[in-house]
Amino acid sequence: MECKKCKTENDKNSNFCVNCGTRLKDVCNCWIKKEPYNCGESKCPSYRLHKKIINQK
Image (cartoon, rainbow, N blue to C red):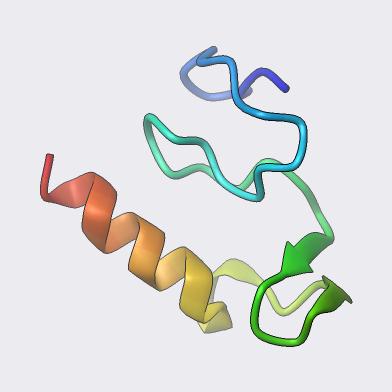
């Protein structure tokens, strides 16, 4: 799956881009709820954690 923002190729199951952290899907495969879920980026614990990791690079 290609990121629309940075064009990095990601695994088809990825919720966020491994390079820039952009959300790749409207409905993520949520690792907290263990089901497809759309909580929105600002409320998503996985998104916040991923952005922290990306920003430390």
